[in-house]
Amino acid sequence: MKEGLNVVHISGHVWSTPTLVTRNGSPLLMFKLSVPSIRRQGDSYVDTYCLIDIIMWGVKARNLHRVLKLHGLIYVGGKLRHSTYMSKKEKKEVTKSQVEADQVLLLGSNPKR
Image 1 (tube, rainbow, N blue to C red):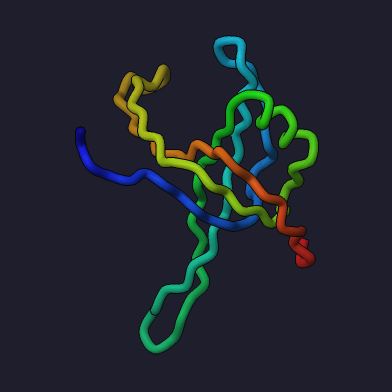
Image 2: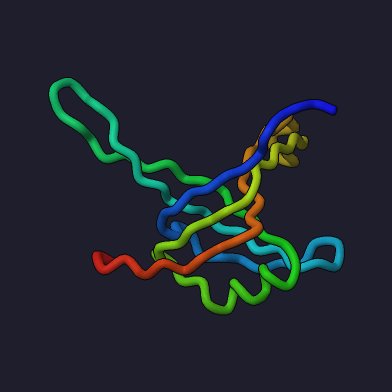
């Protein structure tokens, strides 16, 4: 058995409107999460953001779609998922990494929005 650990714990603001679709008869929720970070630029620090694709399957996805709000602050627990496919438009191989959420907690809203 190969050793390893695939666990993700992140928090941030919902960046894109959550979309609920059905794939192979199962509900699939998709959205982007904006995760803040700070990086050094010369003698100062700059706020940066990482946009992460989040997916969730099944009944949890359907229930979360009802209450998840754009710009809301959430916690996501899950695992990394990596896929490769051929793009229809450019006919090129595309590689995508995303977090498959097992748990999402609503932490609040963004008062700046």
